[in-house]
View 1 (tube, rainbow, N blue to C red):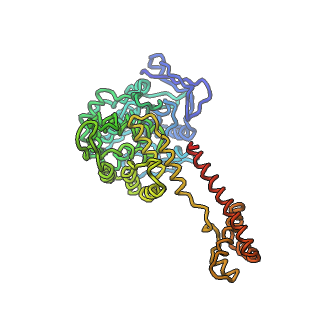
View 2: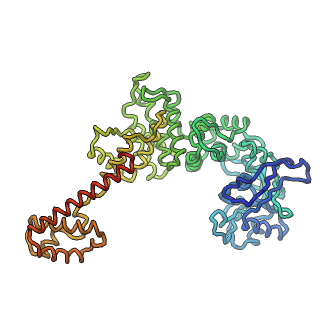
View 3: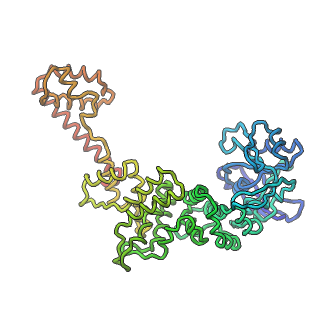
Amino acid sequence: MTGIILALYSEVDMLGMENLEFKKPEETKDNPPEIYMEAPKEVEQIIKKMEEESFEAYVVGGCVRDFLCGKKPNDWDVTTDAKPGKIRKIFPKSFYENKFGTVTAQTQSQDPTLKEIEITTFRIEEKYTDMRHPDEIKFTKILEEDLKRRDFTVNAMALKKESGRWKVIDYFGGQQDLKDKIIRAVGNPEERFKEDALRLMRAIRFATTLNQSKLGSEQALGWQIEPKTFTAIKENSGLLNFISKERVRDELSKIIMSKNAAEGIELLRKTELLKYIIPEILEGYGIGQNKHHIYEVYEHSLRSLNYAAKEGFSQTVRIAALFHDIGKPRTKRGEGPDSTFYGHEVAGAKMTLKILERLRFSKKEIEKIAKLVRYHLFYYNTDEVGESSVRRLIRQVGPENMGELLQVRMADRIGSGVPKAEPYKLRHLKYIIEKVSRDPISVKMLKVSGNDIMEVLGIKPGPKIGMVLDIMLGEVLENPEKNEAEYLRKKIKDLGKFSEEDLKTMSEKARSAREKLETKKDEMTKKKYWLT
């Protein structure tokens, strides 16, 4: 058995084990790969209890892969030769609600990834009529038989604690593939994908998300799909139709939310999976644009997504960045630098609604993304578009969505090949949006009204009411805690003792102070967007 030793040279942080090194062990049967570090105590306790009852028990699956990579696993799985009934007796705080031999043991851990640990009996799976779940499972006493039913070699390894050290059990070369960053199906890839067609997308997801390097527009993925596995994905891509849209959506979301989202989408295209997920995106492949763009529609969309992923934008923005020009192929008129795409944003929004409904996204997310696609083409020029136009845009998009709309525009710009995501015009628009969205300084902010003044002073409508309101607003702006009805009603009584001439002078002074405050706030907002 060949493998890799992970040698620990200093205290390890499970969130980032930079001090681990790969080394090849002596290739002898008596010297298997070892890991000189500890798994969580909850996992070790489960293994120990199983072994005390004379059962075999191993850490298994994706958590082993992450553990070897120095990455904290999202969950921990254990496999054993003990049958579910025996496991439940060993762990009374457990539940068993499936037909696949998996018992979920509950722990006292405060770490959410360790609160529940799945323990599964070694099993063999037979026939997959629905291309997703086995028609029948049989328990076995042999670990290798359990591991060979798994999807990829990097997920088909196990760990066993012996003499205080974790040893890697690897029948299929997973360690070498982990070192070489290769996604390879266990055994015959055709069989693995026909057993569970979701593995087609999982291969792309792993190749996309396991890469830890920084995303660059010209950088290839660190992980590659082994040629036979890649060919099998391509030849069996149609099997994806057997998988529920919800499961496809979940895998797609994981790809889109990775640093390498654009590369992931391109890998879906190359393996021909994309045509079974979002065929509409493929309509833009090879479709040239006009003089305002240097890239074809498909490449422009991927570059926009690439920027959104690089900047860590939300899933909503990433999908909108990918979809924002999806309507262009269907609205294109003419060829060359003067071709047009009139109404592509409207067509794109309608297409977005249908695509996301088909993929079972939530209604709220569908509406939001469609809105971002619909209004991504908003026009703004500092000399031509006034505050009223900005207010109208805010009403159409929703104030809560404006920040993400601007992020989509930034992704669109970078995807078009321009050097700056946020030029002066876009910063100026941000300033105007904040300005018109901000509540103006007004007497309406007071906890009393003109009616209260007339009631307290026993007077009829007239200029005196406005003066009193101005004076009180000035005081509240200096001392916000005084904006209480009881205090202000007393203040009204006091102000009622002054002559109208005195009130006029006090009111003008308060108005002047308010204008200075408005000017200062505006200057601070401009400075925030580098406009001063």
